[in-house]
Length: 212
Image (cartoon, rainbow, N blue to C red; front, side, top):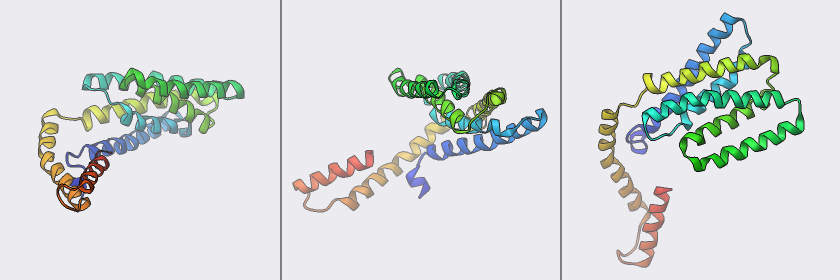
């Protein structure tokens, strides 16, 4: 069932990266908090941000993906700093939050890199409000973001890196299974004479559902 729904294992690899990033960043941040004798709670948002960083970077080349991942550090640290410092000022905090939301959505027009940066800036601002991060805990939170994003960088580009030859081989092997999946789905949904208008509508509806 898993192979039929994910024939080239792309979703499985993505899930493994997110899971490993969460576990590894949590472990590293726990060690850092104990060594520095600081509260781990201020570093909790960094784990979620590292997980989102793994999922939101979708540039076309590996080099661009690496650059975007590193640029997420200033985006996330800037967002959480702004949210934390403006939190005591209710009106300014709400206005800035709406501005960040608008900017994150508007940034979609500028491509995947700016979209990822906008999403991390928005999420970091939101987490600063959700976790009620005090200004005194901001340096620890910033340190946690840097560490967690770098851990995610290592997981994505070294531990579970995409290898182009193996990716091509998996994609080629997945083609027959994907075609078989489409044909079986069409077979289950289509009834009636071959040239009937009803059957044509069923084919179009089935293809729309598969592509949706």
